[in-house]
Length: 113
Picture 1 (cartoon, helix red, strand yellow):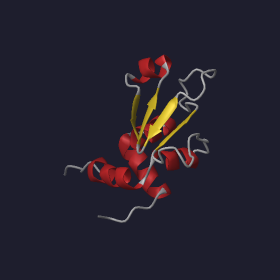
Picture 2 (cartoon, helix red, strand yellow):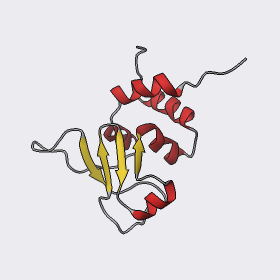
Picture 3 (cartoon, helix red, strand yellow):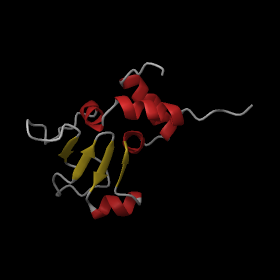
Protein backbone atom coordinates (compact mmCIF):
# COMPACT_ATOMS: atom_id res chain seq x y z
CA UNK A 1 0.00 0.00 0.00
CA UNK A 2 1.38 3.42 -0.94
CA UNK A 3 1.19 6.38 1.36
CA UNK A 4 -0.08 9.76 0.29
CA UNK A 5 1.96 12.89 0.78
CA UNK A 6 -0.04 15.15 3.10
CA UNK A 7 2.09 18.19 2.31
CA UNK A 8 0.50 19.08 -1.06
CA UNK A 9 -3.11 20.16 -0.35
CA UNK A 10 -2.39 20.88 3.30
CA UNK A 11 0.47 23.19 2.38
CA UNK A 12 -1.94 25.19 0.25
CA UNK A 13 -4.37 25.47 3.16
CA UNK A 14 -1.54 26.57 5.45
CA UNK A 15 -0.38 29.17 2.92
CA UNK A 16 -3.90 30.57 2.71
CA UNK A 17 -4.40 30.71 6.48
CA UNK A 18 -1.04 31.03 8.27
CA UNK A 19 1.26 33.99 7.69
CA UNK A 20 4.96 33.70 8.56
CA UNK A 21 4.54 36.46 11.13
CA UNK A 22 2.26 34.11 13.12
CA UNK A 23 4.87 31.33 12.87
CA UNK A 24 7.58 33.70 14.13
CA UNK A 25 5.37 34.69 17.06
CA UNK A 26 4.91 31.00 17.84
CA UNK A 27 8.71 30.76 18.10
CA UNK A 28 8.66 33.95 20.23
CA UNK A 29 10.59 35.89 17.60
CA UNK A 30 9.79 39.59 17.54
CA UNK A 31 9.32 41.35 14.21
CA UNK A 32 9.60 44.95 13.06
CA UNK A 33 7.64 46.81 10.45
CA UNK A 34 4.08 46.61 11.69
CA UNK A 35 2.69 50.12 11.57
CA UNK A 36 -0.05 52.23 10.03
CA UNK A 37 2.01 52.96 6.88
CA UNK A 38 3.61 49.57 6.38
CA UNK A 39 2.44 46.61 4.33
CA UNK A 40 0.65 44.24 6.76
CA UNK A 41 2.03 41.19 4.94
CA UNK A 42 5.65 42.39 5.26
CA UNK A 43 7.87 42.52 8.32
CA UNK A 44 11.51 41.90 9.17
CA UNK A 45 13.59 40.64 12.08
CA UNK A 46 16.90 39.10 12.99
CA UNK A 47 17.38 35.79 11.24
CA UNK A 48 16.51 33.01 13.68
CA UNK A 49 18.13 30.18 11.68
CA UNK A 50 21.04 28.56 13.52
CA UNK A 51 23.43 29.11 10.57
CA UNK A 52 22.98 32.87 10.60
CA UNK A 53 25.85 35.10 11.80
CA UNK A 54 24.84 36.66 15.15
CA UNK A 55 26.01 40.21 14.37
CA UNK A 56 23.88 40.95 11.35
CA UNK A 57 20.58 42.56 12.31
CA UNK A 58 17.22 42.61 10.61
CA UNK A 59 18.30 40.57 7.61
CA UNK A 60 15.28 38.24 7.72
CA UNK A 61 12.38 39.46 5.56
CA UNK A 62 8.86 38.08 5.71
CA UNK A 63 6.31 38.41 2.90
CA UNK A 64 3.01 36.72 3.70
CA UNK A 65 3.79 33.01 4.02
CA UNK A 66 7.29 33.36 2.48
CA UNK A 67 10.60 34.42 4.03
CA UNK A 68 14.01 35.46 2.80
CA UNK A 69 17.33 35.92 4.58
CA UNK A 70 19.74 38.42 3.05
CA UNK A 71 22.81 36.86 4.69
CA UNK A 72 25.33 35.12 2.44
CA UNK A 73 25.88 32.52 5.17
CA UNK A 74 22.24 31.43 5.10
CA UNK A 75 22.16 31.51 1.31
CA UNK A 76 25.25 29.30 1.07
CA UNK A 77 24.08 26.93 3.78
CA UNK A 78 20.53 26.42 2.51
CA UNK A 79 21.23 26.95 -1.22
CA UNK A 80 18.28 29.34 -1.31
CA UNK A 81 17.84 32.72 0.31
CA UNK A 82 14.28 31.96 1.36
CA UNK A 83 11.33 29.65 1.22
CA UNK A 84 7.86 29.15 2.69
CA UNK A 85 6.52 28.73 6.22
CA UNK A 86 6.65 24.92 6.00
CA UNK A 87 10.35 24.95 5.08
CA UNK A 88 11.05 27.39 7.93
CA UNK A 89 9.43 25.11 10.53
CA UNK A 90 11.25 22.09 9.03
CA UNK A 91 14.59 23.91 9.39
CA UNK A 92 13.90 25.16 12.91
CA UNK A 93 12.62 21.78 14.13
CA UNK A 94 15.08 19.76 12.04
CA UNK A 95 12.28 17.61 10.67
CA UNK A 96 10.73 16.68 7.34
CA UNK A 97 8.29 18.93 5.48
CA UNK A 98 5.48 16.47 6.29
CA UNK A 99 6.30 16.72 10.01
CA UNK A 100 6.43 20.50 9.70
CA UNK A 101 2.96 20.50 8.13
CA UNK A 102 1.70 18.44 11.08
CA UNK A 103 3.26 20.93 13.54
CA UNK A 104 1.69 23.89 11.76
CA UNK A 105 -1.72 22.18 11.74
CA UNK A 106 -1.41 21.53 15.49
CA UNK A 107 -0.41 25.14 16.22
CA UNK A 108 -2.90 26.73 13.85
CA UNK A 109 -6.00 24.54 13.43
CA UNK A 110 -7.27 24.77 9.88
CA UNK A 111 -10.71 23.64 8.82
CA UNK A 112 -10.73 21.17 5.94
CA UNK A 113 -11.54 22.77 2.58
